[in-house]
Amino acid sequence: MAHERSATTAPTLRAVSVLALVLGLGFLPAHHGRPEDAVAAPVPPRSGVGSIQRFLTPAYDPTDAMGRKPDEEIVASGDVIIIQTRMAHRVAGLRAQAARMGKPIKILLYELPQQPGPWMSFFPEADAHEDWWLHNPESAMSRDARVRRRDRPGVLDFRRKDVRDFIIAHVMTKWIRPYNLDGYWNDAPSHSLRRLDWIHPPTADQVATWPAGIAAFATEMDAALGSKLFGWNNLTHRFDLSVNPDLASPALDVVRAKTDLHMIEFAYHARFQCVDESSSEANVEAQLRFIQTLTLDAGKNFQAYSGTAFRHSDPTTGRCTGRAGTPDEINRWRDFSFAAYLMQAGRNDTYTWYLNGPVDHAFLQALQVGMPLGPRQKINGVWVREFTGATVKVNLSPSETRDGILPQRAVFIPK
Image (cartoon, rainbow, N blue to C red; front, side, top):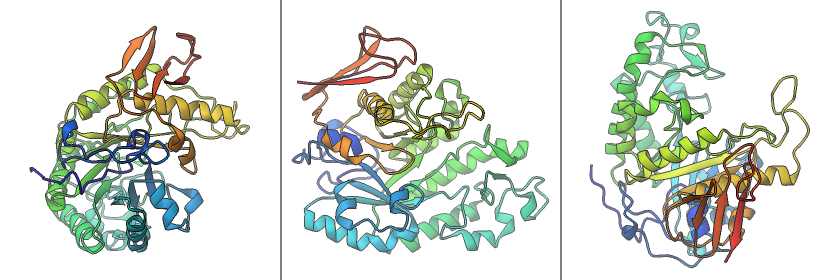
Protein backbone atom coordinates (compact mmCIF):
# COMPACT_ATOMS: atom_id res chain seq x y z
CA MET A 1 0.00 0.00 0.00
CA ALA A 2 1.17 3.54 -0.54
CA HIS A 3 1.85 5.38 2.70
CA GLU A 4 2.37 9.11 2.94
CA ARG A 5 4.37 10.77 5.65
CA SER A 6 5.43 14.35 6.07
CA ALA A 7 9.17 14.83 6.07
CA THR A 8 8.82 17.23 8.96
CA THR A 9 7.02 14.75 11.17
CA ALA A 10 9.15 11.70 10.51
CA PRO A 11 12.50 12.13 12.17
CA THR A 12 13.99 8.67 11.81
CA LEU A 13 13.79 5.06 12.15
CA ARG A 14 15.11 2.92 14.73
CA ALA A 15 17.91 5.01 15.82
CA VAL A 16 19.46 6.35 12.84
CA SER A 17 22.45 5.74 14.69
CA VAL A 18 25.51 6.44 13.21
CA LEU A 19 24.33 7.73 10.14
CA ALA A 20 22.20 10.45 11.09
CA LEU A 21 24.39 10.03 13.95
CA VAL A 22 27.34 10.66 11.94
CA LEU A 23 25.75 12.99 9.49
CA GLY A 24 23.70 14.92 11.95
CA LEU A 25 20.65 14.71 9.69
CA GLY A 26 16.94 14.72 9.96
CA PHE A 27 15.06 11.62 9.12
CA LEU A 28 12.79 9.22 7.48
CA PRO A 29 11.16 9.96 4.17
CA ALA A 30 8.05 7.96 3.40
CA HIS A 31 6.91 4.63 4.79
CA HIS A 32 8.01 2.80 1.66
CA GLY A 33 10.80 4.51 -0.22
CA ARG A 34 14.03 6.38 0.26
CA PRO A 35 14.39 9.06 -2.42
CA GLU A 36 17.11 11.34 -1.09
CA ASP A 37 15.22 14.49 -1.97
CA ALA A 38 12.37 13.36 0.29
CA VAL A 39 14.51 13.35 3.43
CA ALA A 40 13.81 15.91 6.11
CA ALA A 41 16.02 18.98 6.01
CA PRO A 42 19.29 18.63 7.94
CA VAL A 43 19.16 19.60 11.59
CA PRO A 44 22.05 21.12 13.54
CA PRO A 45 24.46 18.32 14.45
CA ARG A 46 24.55 17.14 18.05
CA SER A 47 28.18 16.46 18.89
CA GLY A 48 28.70 16.01 15.18
CA VAL A 49 26.32 13.15 14.73
CA GLY A 50 22.65 12.43 14.42
CA SER A 51 21.58 9.47 16.56
CA ILE A 52 22.02 5.91 17.69
CA GLN A 53 19.72 2.93 17.64
CA ARG A 54 18.48 2.37 21.14
CA PHE A 55 16.77 -0.64 22.65
CA LEU A 56 15.11 0.13 25.94
CA THR A 57 14.81 -3.44 27.09
CA PRO A 58 16.52 -5.69 29.61
CA ALA A 59 17.48 -8.10 26.85
CA TYR A 60 19.44 -5.58 24.81
CA ASP A 61 20.88 -3.20 27.40
CA PRO A 62 22.17 -5.10 30.43
CA THR A 63 23.31 -1.86 32.06
CA ASP A 64 19.66 -0.80 32.09
CA ALA A 65 18.17 -4.12 33.15
CA MET A 66 15.42 -2.50 35.18
CA GLY A 67 14.91 0.49 32.90
CA ARG A 68 16.47 2.88 35.39
CA LYS A 69 18.40 5.11 33.00
CA PRO A 70 17.05 8.66 33.09
CA ASP A 71 14.81 9.83 30.26
CA GLU A 72 17.27 12.55 29.33
CA GLU A 73 20.10 10.07 28.73
CA ILE A 74 17.92 7.76 26.65
CA VAL A 75 16.51 10.53 24.46
CA ALA A 76 19.94 12.13 24.00
CA SER A 77 21.43 8.85 22.78
CA GLY A 78 18.86 7.79 20.20
CA ASP A 79 16.50 9.26 17.63
CA VAL A 80 14.63 5.99 17.41
CA ILE A 81 13.96 3.96 20.53
CA ILE A 82 12.72 0.38 20.34
CA ILE A 83 11.04 -0.85 23.50
CA GLN A 84 9.58 -4.05 24.86
CA THR A 85 6.05 -3.99 26.22
CA ARG A 86 7.23 -4.09 29.82
CA MET A 87 8.96 -0.78 29.23
CA ALA A 88 5.87 0.92 27.80
CA HIS A 89 5.38 2.84 31.03
CA ARG A 90 8.42 4.90 29.99
CA VAL A 91 6.85 6.20 26.76
CA ALA A 92 5.13 9.29 28.20
CA GLY A 93 8.26 10.36 30.04
CA LEU A 94 10.43 9.87 26.98
CA ARG A 95 8.08 11.92 24.82
CA ALA A 96 7.98 14.70 27.42
CA GLN A 97 11.76 14.72 27.67
CA ALA A 98 12.09 14.86 23.90
CA ALA A 99 9.74 17.85 23.81
CA ARG A 100 11.79 19.65 26.45
CA MET A 101 14.94 18.99 24.45
CA GLY A 102 13.29 20.01 21.17
CA LYS A 103 14.25 16.67 19.69
CA PRO A 104 11.92 14.58 17.49
CA ILE A 105 12.05 10.88 18.30
CA LYS A 106 10.35 7.71 17.13
CA ILE A 107 9.35 4.94 19.53
CA LEU A 108 8.71 1.46 18.11
CA LEU A 109 7.38 -1.66 19.78
CA TYR A 110 9.66 -4.71 19.91
CA GLU A 111 8.20 -8.21 19.68
CA LEU A 112 9.46 -11.67 18.74
CA PRO A 113 6.12 -13.25 17.93
CA GLN A 114 7.15 -16.34 16.02
CA GLN A 115 9.29 -17.77 18.83
CA PRO A 116 7.97 -16.01 21.93
CA GLY A 117 9.32 -16.19 25.44
CA PRO A 118 7.29 -16.15 28.66
CA TRP A 119 8.19 -12.48 29.22
CA MET A 120 6.14 -11.38 26.20
CA SER A 121 2.80 -9.83 26.97
CA PHE A 122 0.77 -12.12 24.71
CA PHE A 123 2.45 -15.33 25.85
CA PRO A 124 -0.02 -16.50 28.54
CA GLU A 125 -2.96 -16.40 26.15
CA ALA A 126 -1.02 -18.00 23.30
CA ASP A 127 0.36 -20.67 25.64
CA ALA A 128 -3.17 -21.70 26.55
CA HIS A 129 -3.92 -22.62 22.92
CA GLU A 130 -1.87 -25.75 22.32
CA ASP A 131 -3.16 -25.99 18.76
CA TRP A 132 -1.56 -22.62 17.96
CA TRP A 133 1.95 -24.12 18.17
CA LEU A 134 3.95 -26.20 15.72
CA HIS A 135 4.29 -29.84 16.79
CA ASN A 136 6.27 -32.78 15.54
CA PRO A 137 4.43 -34.96 14.84
CA GLU A 138 1.64 -32.52 14.01
CA SER A 139 -0.98 -34.76 15.57
CA ALA A 140 0.71 -34.64 18.98
CA MET A 141 -0.95 -31.72 20.78
CA SER A 142 1.40 -31.66 23.76
CA ARG A 143 4.09 -29.32 25.07
CA ASP A 144 6.70 -32.04 24.78
CA ALA A 145 6.03 -32.32 21.04
CA ARG A 146 6.36 -28.58 20.35
CA VAL A 147 8.90 -27.57 17.75
CA ARG A 148 11.45 -25.49 19.64
CA ARG A 149 14.87 -23.90 19.60
CA ARG A 150 17.24 -23.37 22.49
CA ASP A 151 15.31 -22.36 25.61
CA ARG A 152 12.22 -21.10 23.79
CA PRO A 153 8.84 -22.70 24.67
CA GLY A 154 8.01 -23.31 21.02
CA VAL A 155 7.18 -21.79 17.64
CA LEU A 156 3.76 -20.31 16.98
CA ASP A 157 2.15 -21.59 13.79
CA PHE A 158 2.06 -18.52 11.57
CA ARG A 159 0.51 -20.55 8.79
CA ARG A 160 -2.75 -20.17 10.74
CA LYS A 161 -4.69 -16.98 10.15
CA ASP A 162 -6.21 -17.05 13.63
CA VAL A 163 -2.70 -16.96 15.11
CA ARG A 164 -1.66 -14.06 12.88
CA ASP A 165 -4.90 -12.20 13.64
CA PHE A 166 -4.35 -12.66 17.36
CA ILE A 167 -0.80 -11.29 17.27
CA ILE A 168 -1.72 -8.30 15.12
CA ALA A 169 -4.77 -7.42 17.22
CA HIS A 170 -2.73 -7.70 20.41
CA VAL A 171 0.04 -5.47 19.08
CA MET A 172 -2.31 -2.81 17.73
CA THR A 173 -5.01 -2.68 20.42
CA LYS A 174 -2.89 -3.11 23.54
CA TRP A 175 0.29 -1.26 22.61
CA ILE A 176 0.56 0.66 19.33
CA ARG A 177 -2.70 2.61 19.63
CA PRO A 178 -2.96 3.13 23.41
CA TYR A 179 0.63 4.37 23.66
CA ASN A 180 0.59 6.11 20.27
CA LEU A 181 3.75 4.29 19.26
CA ASP A 182 5.36 5.11 15.93
CA GLY A 183 5.67 1.58 14.61
CA TYR A 184 6.43 -2.07 15.14
CA TRP A 185 9.73 -3.97 14.98
CA ASN A 186 9.58 -7.72 14.37
CA ASP A 187 12.47 -9.73 15.70
CA ALA A 188 13.46 -12.81 13.73
CA PRO A 189 14.84 -14.93 11.93
CA SER A 190 11.43 -16.07 10.90
CA HIS A 191 11.01 -16.31 7.15
CA SER A 192 12.54 -19.79 7.02
CA LEU A 193 12.73 -22.77 9.37
CA ARG A 194 15.74 -24.26 7.62
CA ARG A 195 19.17 -24.77 9.16
CA LEU A 196 18.35 -23.44 12.60
CA ASP A 197 19.62 -24.90 15.86
CA TRP A 198 16.62 -27.03 16.78
CA ILE A 199 16.13 -28.95 20.00
CA HIS A 200 12.95 -30.49 18.54
CA PRO A 201 12.89 -29.87 14.76
CA PRO A 202 9.95 -29.10 12.47
CA THR A 203 8.52 -31.56 10.00
CA ALA A 204 9.41 -31.38 6.31
CA ASP A 205 5.91 -30.14 5.52
CA GLN A 206 6.18 -27.38 8.11
CA VAL A 207 9.47 -26.23 6.63
CA ALA A 208 7.94 -26.17 3.14
CA THR A 209 4.71 -24.36 4.06
CA TRP A 210 6.01 -21.95 6.69
CA PRO A 211 7.21 -19.12 4.38
CA ALA A 212 3.72 -18.50 2.96
CA GLY A 213 2.42 -17.82 6.47
CA ILE A 214 5.21 -15.35 7.16
CA ALA A 215 4.53 -13.53 3.88
CA ALA A 216 0.87 -13.30 4.87
CA PHE A 217 1.81 -11.94 8.30
CA ALA A 218 4.02 -9.24 6.78
CA THR A 219 1.22 -8.22 4.44
CA GLU A 220 -1.44 -8.17 7.17
CA MET A 221 0.71 -6.34 9.71
CA ASP A 222 1.66 -3.74 7.12
CA ALA A 223 -2.03 -3.10 6.45
CA ALA A 224 -2.77 -2.78 10.18
CA LEU A 225 0.10 -0.34 10.76
CA GLY A 226 -0.99 2.01 8.00
CA SER A 227 1.50 4.90 7.89
CA LYS A 228 3.47 3.69 10.90
CA LEU A 229 6.96 2.22 10.56
CA PHE A 230 7.51 -1.51 10.13
CA GLY A 231 10.91 -3.01 10.90
CA TRP A 232 12.13 -6.60 10.46
CA ASN A 233 15.23 -8.19 11.92
CA ASN A 234 17.52 -10.71 10.25
CA LEU A 235 16.22 -10.62 6.74
CA THR A 236 19.42 -12.49 6.02
CA HIS A 237 18.32 -15.46 8.16
CA ARG A 238 21.92 -16.51 8.72
CA PHE A 239 25.08 -14.74 9.77
CA ASP A 240 27.13 -16.04 6.85
CA LEU A 241 25.54 -14.49 3.77
CA SER A 242 28.13 -15.95 1.45
CA VAL A 243 26.51 -19.40 1.81
CA ASN A 244 22.87 -18.49 2.29
CA PRO A 245 20.45 -19.76 -0.38
CA ASP A 246 17.43 -18.46 1.55
CA LEU A 247 18.10 -14.98 0.21
CA ALA A 248 16.12 -16.02 -2.87
CA SER A 249 13.01 -16.89 -0.82
CA PRO A 250 9.73 -15.63 -2.37
CA ALA A 251 8.46 -15.03 1.17
CA LEU A 252 11.45 -12.82 1.83
CA ASP A 253 10.58 -10.78 -1.25
CA VAL A 254 7.16 -10.09 0.26
CA VAL A 255 8.67 -9.18 3.63
CA ARG A 256 11.10 -6.76 2.00
CA ALA A 257 8.29 -5.15 0.05
CA LYS A 258 6.07 -4.63 3.09
CA THR A 259 8.65 -3.39 5.58
CA ASP A 260 10.60 -0.16 5.93
CA LEU A 261 13.58 -1.14 8.05
CA HIS A 262 15.79 -4.11 7.19
CA MET A 263 18.21 -5.14 9.88
CA ILE A 264 21.33 -7.29 9.73
CA GLU A 265 21.89 -8.18 13.36
CA PHE A 266 25.33 -9.68 12.85
CA ALA A 267 26.81 -7.08 10.52
CA TYR A 268 30.56 -6.97 9.81
CA HIS A 269 31.60 -8.31 13.24
CA ALA A 270 28.96 -9.89 15.47
CA ARG A 271 28.46 -9.48 19.19
CA PHE A 272 28.91 -13.22 19.68
CA GLN A 273 32.33 -13.25 17.96
CA CYS A 274 35.30 -13.40 20.32
CA VAL A 275 37.53 -10.36 20.41
CA ASP A 276 40.33 -12.37 18.75
CA GLU A 277 38.02 -13.81 16.05
CA SER A 278 38.22 -12.33 12.57
CA SER A 279 35.28 -11.95 10.24
CA SER A 280 35.10 -13.69 6.88
CA GLU A 281 35.96 -11.28 4.08
CA ALA A 282 33.63 -13.19 1.75
CA ASN A 283 30.80 -12.81 4.26
CA VAL A 284 31.27 -9.07 4.76
CA GLU A 285 31.44 -8.57 0.99
CA ALA A 286 28.22 -10.60 0.69
CA GLN A 287 26.60 -8.41 3.33
CA LEU A 288 27.54 -5.31 1.35
CA ARG A 289 26.02 -6.81 -1.81
CA PHE A 290 22.88 -7.87 0.05
CA ILE A 291 22.40 -4.44 1.57
CA GLN A 292 22.84 -2.75 -1.78
CA THR A 293 20.76 -4.94 -4.05
CA LEU A 294 18.01 -6.15 -1.73
CA THR A 295 17.55 -3.12 0.51
CA LEU A 296 19.01 0.16 -0.75
CA ASP A 297 18.21 -0.37 -4.41
CA ALA A 298 14.67 -1.32 -3.35
CA GLY A 299 14.21 2.02 -1.63
CA LYS A 300 14.43 0.66 1.91
CA ASN A 301 16.41 1.62 4.97
CA PHE A 302 18.94 -0.75 6.47
CA GLN A 303 20.01 -1.20 10.06
CA ALA A 304 23.45 -2.53 10.88
CA TYR A 305 23.95 -4.13 14.28
CA SER A 306 27.57 -4.90 15.10
CA GLY A 307 29.63 -5.78 18.14
CA THR A 308 32.07 -8.15 19.75
CA ALA A 309 32.34 -10.36 22.76
CA PHE A 310 34.82 -8.73 25.11
CA ARG A 311 36.88 -11.87 25.78
CA HIS A 312 39.29 -14.02 23.81
CA SER A 313 38.34 -17.50 22.72
CA ASP A 314 39.17 -20.42 25.00
CA PRO A 315 41.51 -22.74 23.04
CA THR A 316 39.84 -25.84 24.48
CA THR A 317 36.18 -24.91 24.02
CA GLY A 318 36.31 -22.22 21.35
CA ARG A 319 33.93 -20.14 23.44
CA CYS A 320 34.56 -16.51 24.38
CA THR A 321 35.62 -17.33 27.93
CA GLY A 322 39.34 -16.54 27.70
CA ARG A 323 41.12 -13.47 28.96
CA ALA A 324 39.44 -10.10 28.67
CA GLY A 325 40.19 -8.08 25.58
CA THR A 326 42.10 -4.83 25.89
CA PRO A 327 40.45 -1.53 24.96
CA ASP A 328 42.51 -1.46 21.76
CA GLU A 329 41.37 -4.98 20.80
CA ILE A 330 37.74 -4.10 21.41
CA ASN A 331 37.94 -0.74 19.65
CA ARG A 332 39.45 -2.41 16.60
CA TRP A 333 36.10 -4.07 15.89
CA ARG A 334 34.16 -0.94 16.74
CA ASP A 335 36.15 1.03 14.17
CA PHE A 336 36.11 -1.77 11.58
CA SER A 337 32.34 -2.30 11.81
CA PHE A 338 31.51 1.37 11.77
CA ALA A 339 33.71 1.98 8.73
CA ALA A 340 32.11 -0.96 6.89
CA TYR A 341 28.71 0.52 7.67
CA LEU A 342 29.77 3.92 6.35
CA MET A 343 30.69 2.38 3.00
CA GLN A 344 26.96 2.32 2.20
CA ALA A 345 25.15 4.41 4.77
CA GLY A 346 22.64 6.89 3.45
CA ARG A 347 20.63 9.58 5.16
CA ASN A 348 18.10 7.28 6.76
CA ASP A 349 20.15 4.25 7.66
CA THR A 350 21.01 3.24 11.18
CA TYR A 351 23.81 1.67 13.13
CA THR A 352 24.25 0.10 16.55
CA TRP A 353 27.46 -0.97 18.24
CA TYR A 354 26.93 -3.62 20.88
CA LEU A 355 29.72 -4.86 23.11
CA ASN A 356 27.86 -7.75 24.75
CA GLY A 357 26.65 -4.99 27.00
CA PRO A 358 26.09 -1.26 26.66
CA VAL A 359 26.04 0.50 23.31
CA ASP A 360 29.17 2.61 22.91
CA HIS A 361 27.51 5.98 22.39
CA ALA A 362 30.51 8.17 23.17
CA PHE A 363 32.61 7.03 20.23
CA LEU A 364 29.83 7.39 17.71
CA GLN A 365 28.80 10.80 18.96
CA ALA A 366 32.36 12.10 18.82
CA LEU A 367 32.83 11.50 15.10
CA GLN A 368 32.36 14.19 12.49
CA VAL A 369 32.57 12.55 9.10
CA GLY A 370 29.89 14.75 7.60
CA MET A 371 27.96 14.04 4.41
CA PRO A 372 28.97 11.35 1.87
CA LEU A 373 30.36 12.76 -1.37
CA GLY A 374 29.73 9.66 -3.45
CA PRO A 375 29.60 5.85 -3.38
CA ARG A 376 32.35 3.63 -2.01
CA GLN A 377 35.26 2.66 -4.24
CA LYS A 378 37.81 -0.14 -3.96
CA ILE A 379 41.31 1.33 -4.17
CA ASN A 380 44.45 -0.73 -3.58
CA GLY A 381 42.32 -3.55 -2.22
CA VAL A 382 40.49 -1.53 0.43
CA TRP A 383 37.07 0.10 0.40
CA VAL A 384 37.21 3.88 0.46
CA ARG A 385 34.47 6.47 0.76
CA GLU A 386 34.79 10.23 0.83
CA PHE A 387 32.77 12.38 3.21
CA THR A 388 32.74 16.13 3.67
CA GLY A 389 34.62 15.82 6.95
CA ALA A 390 36.78 12.76 6.48
CA THR A 391 38.03 9.98 4.23
CA VAL A 392 37.04 6.56 5.55
CA LYS A 393 38.97 3.41 4.60
CA VAL A 394 38.42 -0.19 5.65
CA ASN A 395 40.46 -3.30 4.92
CA LEU A 396 38.18 -6.36 4.92
CA SER A 397 40.99 -8.92 4.67
CA PRO A 398 41.53 -10.95 7.86
CA SER A 399 45.16 -11.67 6.94
CA GLU A 400 46.62 -9.14 4.49
CA THR A 401 47.84 -5.61 5.05
CA ARG A 402 46.47 -3.51 2.21
CA ASP A 403 47.27 0.10 1.35
CA GLY A 404 49.17 0.32 4.63
CA ILE A 405 46.10 -0.73 6.67
CA LEU A 406 46.44 -3.77 8.90
CA PRO A 407 44.05 -6.72 8.49
CA GLN A 408 40.43 -5.88 9.35
CA ARG A 409 41.24 -2.40 10.49
CA ALA A 410 39.81 0.97 9.52
CA VAL A 411 41.12 4.50 9.32
CA PHE A 412 39.26 7.79 9.53
CA ILE A 413 41.29 10.62 7.99
CA PRO A 414 39.97 14.08 8.92
CA LYS A 415 39.85 16.75 6.25
